[in-house]
Amino acid sequence: MPDDSLTVVDNRTSKSYTLPIKHNTIRATDLRQIKTGPEDFGLMPYDPAFMNTASCESTITFIDGDKGILRYRGYPIEQLAEHCTYLEVAYLLIHGELPDREQLAGWEAGVKRHASIRENIKKFMEGFRYDAHPMGMLVSSIAAMSTIYPESRHIFDPEIRARQVRRLFAKVPIIAAYIYRLYQGYAFVPPDPDLSYTENFMNMLWRKSEGRFRPNPVLAHALDVLYILHADHEQNCSTSTMREVGSSHADPYVTAAAAAAALSGPLHGGANEEVLHMLAEIGSKDKIPAYIQRVKQGECKLMASATAFIRTTIRGPASASGSPTRSSRSPAATPRSISPSSWSASPSMTTTSSSASSIRTSTSTPGSSTRPWASGRDVHGAIRHRAHRGLAGAVGRAARRQGPEDRPPAPDLPGPRVPRFRAHGAARARQRRGGT
Image (cartoon, rainbow, N blue to C red; front, side):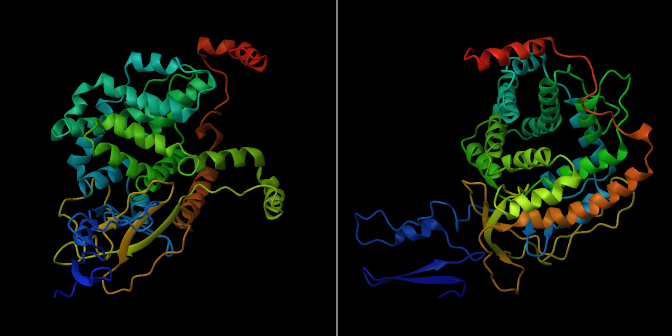
């Protein structure tokens, strides 16, 4: 009898069964052999909330909320945030290793090559009702790209598949920025090929009538770091949704739209929206103590842009050395003191999640004991608190060194407006009177 196995005795039949254990898990299909008779379908696990069900092996992300640890492909998030750009981290997550200079140049050029959207997509977006929710507009616009790029259905062609990845990286920020400008009543701003990925997003959001937008480097770096922090968080609700929809061999655009739809829920990405509403309600920092007092008295809630995780951890060796190794390629930009952690970049058994919680089954590093996490542990909060605290200090110090001329224009400055928004006042009046 192998050591890594589980012996199950069925008291109904007095038969015993030996089930192999891998990464502290057993396969659900191995339970099928446990039957009471030939007509019995076999034993099945029952886990309606996916509280303890693993669905895949992954070496992409490691999270330990108790210790405030977030690692991508074995690299600590602190090092990636300090030394890498968002597109470099995206390359790392996709390919498993940081790019060298040539690879990074090709990756960035490939994304910029697709940095535009068709006129029919813009017209499609302009057809939404004036008070349409931004996430509904985003989901619909991403799904609509499936009709524009029918080649995306050939998901087993590596080159076609990679092209859709570059398109999504390039076009989603454009769509998101245009949604914002539609809400503000401003005209569409095309991407500027001379700006970086995050600088371009700022340009498309905030450019008004000036000849050329000058992004604030401090804000651009802060946005880049925020992108890195949000790049991957294991098998959360939207990731699980995309995997499930993609398992039917649907094209990348409708699967990404499904993931965005999951993200829109108030128990997932919608939590960030609730935080923004709370900040708008607070108004200024001098009103924070009064708001905290209201929270303590139970008059309102203190919202957090985080997701609850419920999991146990599983790690096994990924290589003979037991730890990830960097290639001999030189870093893409300036020399970095960045290297993978000694954590073993081993497969992690990750569950499917049908709710806002990302529910994983994994184990601790080899040699450590398995320890279940407390229900509702705020993993994102523990990680982001550490990262944001350092980022806030750096941004604050750099901002104090910036002159007023280096700061971006306020988003509410007057600018060119989309004509259809001039009738919004009348539309709202009709709606109040019960019209359409």
